[in-house]
Length: 179
Image 1 (cartoon, rainbow, N blue to C red):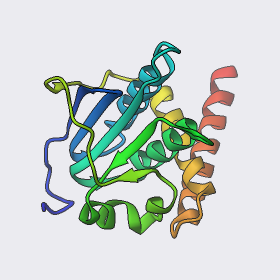
Image 2: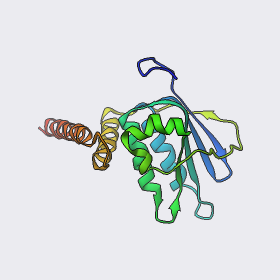
Image 3: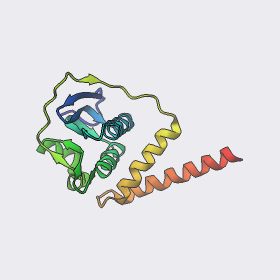
């Protein structure tokens, strides 16, 4: 396991499974990959034909760090696609990965997690993040932290503070642009 301060290259790979897609996150799950994950999962699930529902599993077994924005993104996708009787989003994590990356924030209590990875039926393809406008990225970070602030985890107050600060900055930017 690498130390958090070491800069390990993060990779985002996707392959097909019998029932959808497997996303493999390697290295660090951060704000840089978070919008790509969100966009991929939402489009894959929502654009699937009704006659063939699609699910997406996110494999964190080769991941050694998750920042708060990435955690908030996982929470957002879990809430959006795992409603009563409809479970189409899953995080795959070994017991050790779960302990290191998800337990400290209590995410292991609210996100659908499996230790078993669905079998891929295609070779993985590496995807890269498109450049986002600062406002789009800022909005994504804000939404992720709002969700984390609603979650009953140990850093709830810190996430609420971050969301409030971002809200204030967006309000100030809007006021300046409208002046």
